[in-house]
Image 1 (spheres, rainbow, N blue to C red):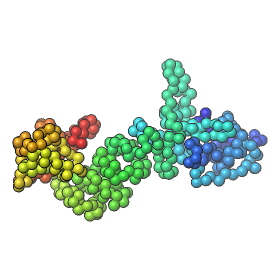
Image 2: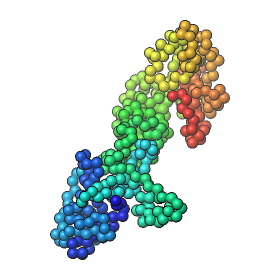
Image 3: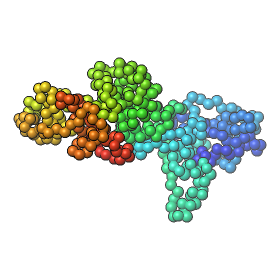
Image 4: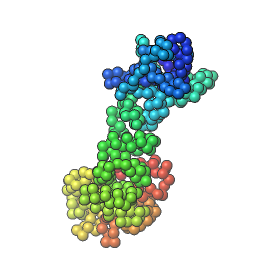
Amino acid sequence: MAFLSTLIGKPVADVNGDPVGHLDDLIASVRSDMPHPLVTALVIRRPRERWVVPMSAVAVLIAPAVPLTRAAGDLPRYEPAEQDLYLARDVLDKQIIDINGVRVVRVNDLELARVDHDYYVANVDIGGLGLLRRLGLARLAERLARGAGRKAPASVIAWDDVELLRADQPLRLKVPGEKISELHPADLAELISDLKRMHGDNLLAALDVKTLADTLEEVEPDFQASLVEDMPDERVADVLEEMAPDEAADLLAELPQDRSRDLLDLMQEEEAEDVRRLLTYPEESAGGIMTTDFVVLPEGLTAGAAIARLRETARENETLTYIYVADSRDHLVGVVSLHELVLADPATPVAEFMHRRVVSVGLLDSQEEVAQAVSKYNLVAIPVVDGEQRIQGIVTADDALDKVLPTAWKKRLPRLYH
């Protein structure tokens, strides 16, 4: 075994022992029928040029100085093919996504293996030891570790567990998850925030619309805006339709007004109307942070009829912790938890067991007032009503506390309303 970092910079000499230059890079062929790339050529750095020489002209690769089999004037040239990869230029320091650890890591070195007379890329080194090796400090780190009675830590990933994307994209692990979209949206959001801008855009482009919408909801609106900046309007409009109305409104508020209007015009009218209405309220008022994603039922239903109505109308609704009850004039008259509704006798009228003293806030109440009410009454969500006590939306606990709690604390709160 040898590492790429220990080969780069080594002197190269021809068959007569005359210096030719220094090893600058290795080229490997990446083919679908081979699990590991085959090293096919050397890039030799000379004073004013670089020579690319095939491995057939190399006597020994792993040596203090790389000897060639021919005189410098007789060396053949190698023409890189489409499937070829420059290992130092194209792989070292590139980011990969470790799905198992849900993290973004960097390629610090590559481990090569000799099989008969050929050399293959065996492993990707993502550990600190690989970085120290490139700095010339690996032996020192190993001696210090041995002195402390430990082994210097190594962290490698087999090359056949790595999927190589286009040259302008990161390497991505194939296993253990077959699709990166299977990760939780919060994990995806963290990965994207850790990736460089170009790589984050590439990852977003690979997600389906629903997963992309869920992922965007996990980051702040200003970061959302930067992520969709270069996306086609049609795709952004589809994503906005999948987002909760309040999240979509927050994102649109961060975009230029002209683009925001264009995106609203591309959305389905029903979803666009909800978002337009939310955009009319002050940003940090109850109306500005509420969502129209809630369930309200007429008070004349029995528990069984209410559950049947939920099955018909609330399939797309994610916030089903509370079901609100309205009279014939749409006035908010009660609330019942989903738990209470499911446990109730199906023949019992909802009006008999609903809570009639409903804590609510007004459309123009401040976010601080909403947060105080949520905290005081230990609510998962709170309804927002107009002057006639008609419910206009709800504010979930995490949105209410968004500006009140430090971000680090807020992330530790369970998302109970999902």
